[in-house]
Length: 361
Image (tube, rainbow, N blue to C red; front, side, top):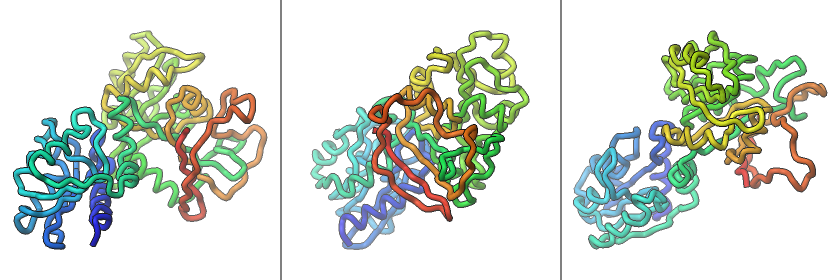
């Protein structure tokens, strides 16, 4: 077994914390002694022990003289839990193999320095690209204090997200829709516009039996969301934020009484200033958002520069209709050279449907 093999196992473990550790990173750890794995662990829940301490606690024999493989540089500061560097030093571990360095200013190389200072051999950058990819949300959030935003939509092969009558259920099959539910679990927030709430009355929850529902964020410039809407009626059960430009406290009160949080933000053009909204959401611990908006909100988000990734589900169907909706509206760009540029997409099949995933460049 090589360093890469053990780090791959650490990555598998880290992914088990997906959706449960936000806004912390997903981290996995494997302890190896005399060619045998003697301990494993991962960060399971926000506020609970980190991967390194779980791995040490699971050791079947003494970890003295062993090597630890960990996907992220061990922390060296007191937060919800004590520093992992302290536990590693006390355990007698002699080598630590690290995937990603931690951009958190409280760590950022300090963890590695502490280990070296205590005579522990440190190897860095093993499967670094995979380890970095695992925590793209954490890396963005810890450096920018704003949510990592993923714009998601499903469309037919002629680029329609609904028929001419507005009907949209269902464009994709069950496998693709199940993946969307897993992403609702993975990301901390889900965002849509008041128009979508009025038209579809969605719940915007995670429907996986073992999943965590996201914080629901409704962009509602004038506070027109019906008080009878599902998102309002269930706000006591699922955290719900209404982002609005309306400063009328009397108008906001019924929503607050129902359990909604009302964020008053500035206006850009005819809509909520999404650029100004992002730091406010980040300040509330929302590190990531799955944007499931209509064409107006999608354009506004792109134009505001808050979108980091696109997930496009493409179904082998045709709707036709010049009045049928497309995924992104607004005024659009004037010339092809002004197009928003995306990275080369990854392609994943879900039954008969395709998911294209690209970063916004």
